[in-house]
Image (tube, rainbow, N blue to C red; front, side, top):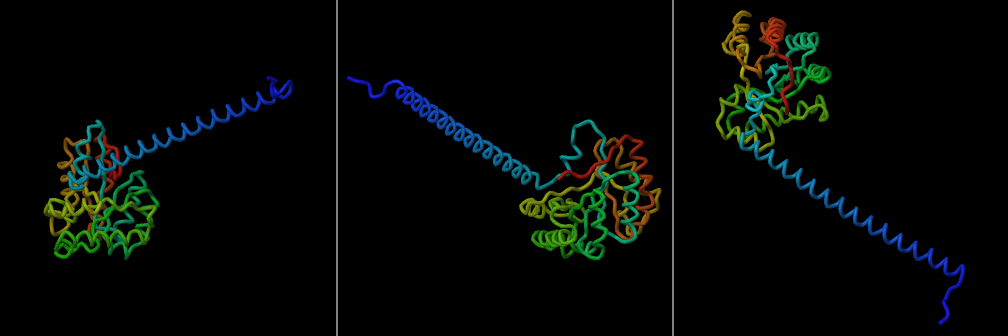
Length: 272
C-alpha cells in the first residue's frame, strides 16, 4: 500500500498532528486550572461566609457588647480610649478638639442627633481630624427612647440618618452605639434588639464623673474620679462629656491627658 503523503507532505502532516495535540493539551490544562480556581474560590467563599456567620453568632451571644472584648484584651499594652458623650456643643466641642489636636490624640464621639443638626460643622471637623463618630441617641429623652426596644432602635436609626446626611456614608460606619446611661440601665430585650439590628455597643470602665451629680462638680473631684477608676487597669474606656454644660470637663482635659501619659497609656479609637 502506497503512503498518502511523501516527503514534504509527511512533514506537514506531522506538524499538523503536533499542533493539534499541543492545542488539546493546553486547552485541557486551561480547563483544569479554571475548574481548580473555581473550586478554590468556592472554598474561600464558603470559609468567609462561615467566618461571617461565626462573628454574627458571637455578637448575638454577647448581645453586641464590645466592652468586655476591649477591657479584657491581654496584649500587655496600656491603652486609653477617650470617649465623649452628648455632643456636639458649640462651646465645649471646639475646645476639646483643639486640645486633642495639640496632643495628637484621636477620640470617639457618641453623638446626639439633634445636637448634630444644630452643629453640623463640628461633626465635619471631627471626621476631618481623624476622630471616630458613633451613635448615642437622637433626642436623649429617656422616657421616649426607652419606651420599648423598637423605640430605641428607631431613635438610633434616626440619629444614623442625621450623621450620614452631614458627613456622608464613606465617613461613618454607623454600627457603634452607646446606650444613654449605659447598657446596664436597660433590660436584656434592649440589648438583644440592638444586636439583632446589627449594632454593637460599648460602655465604659473608667470616668471623670462629670455626669454623676445634678450639678457640675469641681475639677479636683473629676480628677480624683479619673485616678480612682483607672487604677490598676491596662485598658480603660473613659467616659467624658462634651455637652454644653460640661465646661469643667473641657478645662481638666489637658491634665487628664498628661496624667494618662505619665501612667504609660497610649491612646486609641474604639474598634468597630
